[in-house]
Image (tube, rainbow, N blue to C red; front, side, top):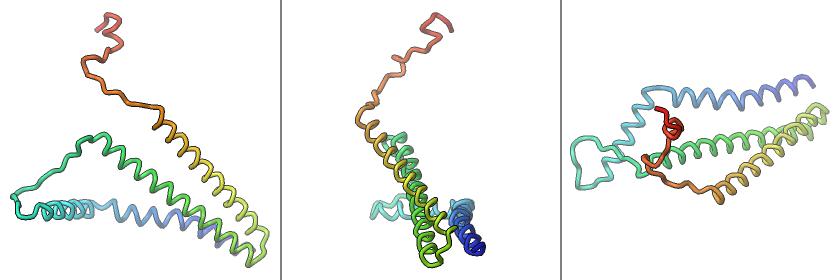
Length: 158
């Protein structure tokens, strides 16, 4: 019984640590960053067709703020999806383990991971509703820099 619990804990920790280690090794090296940049530049240069011009070209998005927010949002969604997948896999593994072995600890682990999965899904739904409401209600208004009043200038200070 303790061996099953130990294997369950090892599997849970491995599902967290191994992807983090492989991602750090894959993305942390300066050589991989340089290589990916050169590959991207090669792809960009090959899309210009007959109009090849010597030198490197930099593409600038029309709205850099929206571009940065979109990338950050994509990272958040990817992290949330992976967390949901891991919780689902752990819940399913505990269910199979508890059905096969009939150990009460496996049932407790299944109930714990099932409740965690249910809570995480409820949290995701809450975040989705909040984001939809924010997009419906909040409207960003452009402003001119000269229209902005600094608090000290408004009171006659420097």
